[in-house]
Image (cartoon, rainbow, N blue to C red):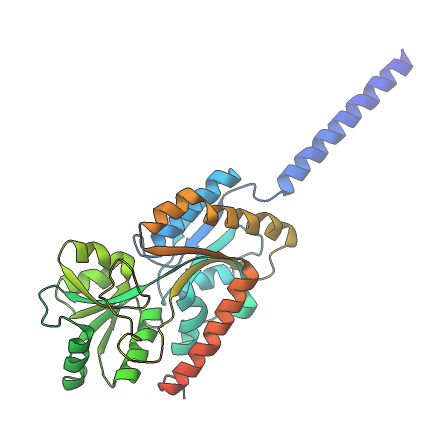
Amino acid sequence: MKGLASCVAAILFTLVALGIGVSCGFAQSYPNHSVQFVIPATPGSAIDIPGRMVADELSKSSGVPFVPINKPGGSFTLGTDFVARSKKDGYTLVYTNNPAIVYSRIISPDTVRYDPDKDLEPLGLHLFFAHAIAVQSNAPWKTMKELLDYAKANPDKLRVSTAGIGSVTHFHLETIESLTGTQFNHVPFKSGEAVITALLGGHVEVTFDAVSKIIPHVESGKLRMLLTTIKMKEYPNVPTIRDLGYKQQLVPSWFGMYGPAGLPEDVKKVLVPAIEKAMRNPELKTKIDKLQFIVDYRPPAEQKKLAADEYAGALVIAKKIGLLQ
């Protein structure tokens, strides 16, 4: 009997030990609780909509909630900075853009407390998209050339709304001014719908914002597009800056995922493939195509190189147009 009892006890001990081992292993696996999915802009903004779509896909595939949290301000740098300074465990991530990674540290370096190269871990680039210059449909300027001619004759008179100081459109506006010899009155917002509503309400004469936000108002007859940063087959008569005879191209904007630098390798091994799968999902692509975005996934290494090359090119332009001393 004692032998049998000892055998049963040994078996029970082994089962308990195995159960504990499995439990501990599961507790340490990633992810096992909700993830903060920071979007550094206002709800309804151009980056917020696809960001929430990606968060939803990641929630479905991982079985844990990827919770969208809007942290607008500082031309997308406040939310990005929040993640750069967060715990390095994979439970706080950011869906951000090239203003936060490239342009803000050139235009307003004093406001960017993080170093994108040292403090952030690229996890996959999602998409590219165009911006456009637009005016009200009843405005006197029918073409970009007419707008530029008026701006030259009336420096600082035309108010132009953008998504903020250090945004891509702010940088593009500075570039256009340098190339064309014009001077606009820049009116920055904190992204969101205010950039467009300022034009619709007559508070500014011009807007420079995401094509995806402008097109619905073009189709409704309220706005007229005069320039796009990427040639669009749907609007062949709307020129790019190169179509107007200028050599400098305006680079497209992009959205991508980042975490704080120093994420554990076992976390990245789970997270990077999961992000790629979500971003390549055909159903998600179909939804995003309708927003006039170009889904073009790039892995972390390519994402890092693209940002570095863009930063180097932007520095050259910034010095040329006098943004840097």
